[in-house]
Image (cartoon, one colour):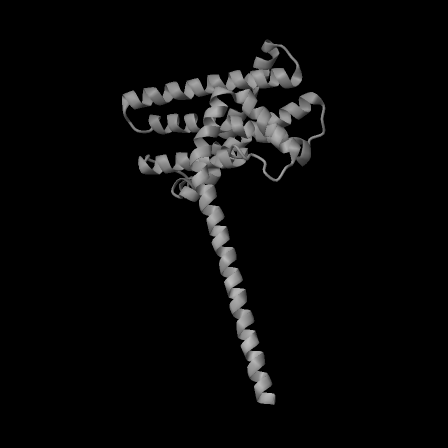
Length: 245
């Protein structure tokens, strides 16, 4: 009687373990299915979102703010979320730089070499540098409005600015890569691309601050120009700090 009960109990345990393994496998397959779908969807939504930002930047930024306000589960259903878009853009830049074998400074400081010689570290470093732009713009807007700076109030303008920063980061980074290829024509194209990206960024920032603050074009242009100068100074400061270690 005892042996029969033990055998039955062991059989039920094996069935339970088998059922659990089957459920775990199904969960893994569903997760893999979701990952594959999202990865394939990005091939469509990434260029679509970038084109939308370049052609209608203010509308794209407004869309980001609305999605953050709505707080719905299917946010950014027809686009790529702003931080992810910026990260993917910098990942693309990293891939291009690696493929073109962009030369790095041989006499760079140890910390700089650690960053430049590692694609992962370089991606994180670029993400930090370009994130300074949306962060500075968001803080500046809140200060100009007299609002308290918190994670909640910072989120909407930061996400909107991440949209604006993504194509800017793409063109600026590609332009800088082009200037490092040691070909006169390519370097000229890179410099022109860099200048055009800065002009586009200045114009859109001015338009955005004009709408958000209800000010004139001259004041908005002054704010936009000051923002670019401040962001550039912060970037150069971080780069100089890294280069010294």
